[in-house]
Amino acid sequence: MRREGLPAAAPPAWTEAPPDPPELPEAVDPRWPAWSAPVALIASLFAMGFAIAPFLVPLGLLESDSSLQSTLEGPSLLLLIAVQDAVLVGTAWLFARITVRPRTWHFGLRPTRFWPTVGLIALAVVVLLGFEIGYIELLGVDDSNADDLGAEESLIGAIAVSIAVIVVAPVTEEFFFRGFFYRALRNRMRIGWAVLIDALVFTSLHFEGTSTLATLPVIAVFGAGVCLVYERTGSLFAVIAIHAIFNTFATAVSGGQVMIVALVTGAIVLLGCVLVPRRLPRTPSPLRGAARKGGRLAAGPPPLAPSAPPPAISPAGV
Image (cartoon, rainbow, N blue to C red; front, side, top):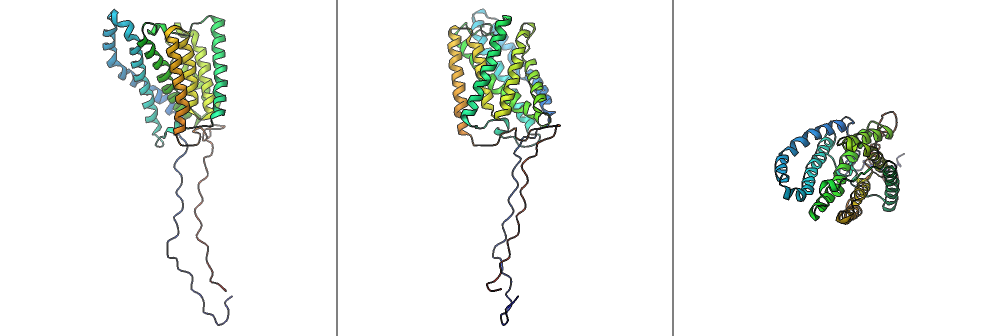
C-alpha cells in the first residue's frame, strides 16, 4: 500500500544486464558405444598387419646372419611390439572420438587415493601371482619365454626384452583393453559380462600356438582380475602397475642378467605409476557413468537449473 502524499516510486533501473546462466558442463563420462570395442579391435588388427609388414623383410635379412641373430632378437621384438601397440593406442583414441573429444582421464589416467589403491594392487598381485605359481607347480608349466627371445644372449637383448615386456606391453595393452575396450563394454553391460568378454578377448590375443595353450588360463584369470581392479579404482596406473609386476615376475624367473634387468625395469615402472599421477589434475572416475543393471546407463549428473531472475527491490517505506 502506498503512503498518502508520496509519489509512486518507479521500478529500479538495472544498470547491468543480469548474469548469463552458467554453462552446462562438458560431457564428463566417456559414452563410447559398446560396438566400438570389437570394431576397434578388428580395425587395429588390420592396421597392425600394414604397420608391421615393412619391417619384416629387413629384420628377417638381418637375423639370417648368425653373428647378428642373437644380438638383434631382443631389439627386433621391442620394435615390433612398439609398432603394434602404438597401433592399439592410436585406434582406441580414434574410436573414442566418435562421441566426444577424448581426454586422458576418460582412459583412467588420473590420480586416486594412494594407500587404498596400493592396498588393492597388493591384494590383486598376491591373488594373481598366487594363482599363477600354484597353477605352474600343479601342471609343471613353464610360462617364461625370455630365453627364447634372446634375453640371455646379451645385455642389449635383456634390456630390449625387459622394456618390451615390462614397459611397453603393460602401458599400451592396459590403455586399450581396460581403458577403452572394457569401458566401452560397460556402457551397455553389467560388470560380469564386461569382465568375461574382456578377459576372453585379451586371452585369445595371447594365443601363439599349441605350446601356449597351457598358459591361457593364467592369462584369463589375470585379465579378469585387472578388470575388477580397474572397475574399483578407475585408475589405469593401478592396472599398469599390476601388469608390470606380473610380467616382471615372468621375466625374472629366467635368472642371471635377465633377472637383474627385469627387476630394475619393473621398479622404474612402479615408480612412474606413483609419480606421474601426482602431476595430473583430480578428475572423476571414468566408470562412474557405466551401466548398472539391465543394460542401462547410470544417470549422469543432473543438469544445472536455469538461473532465476534477480529479486525485485522495493523502495524503502513501501
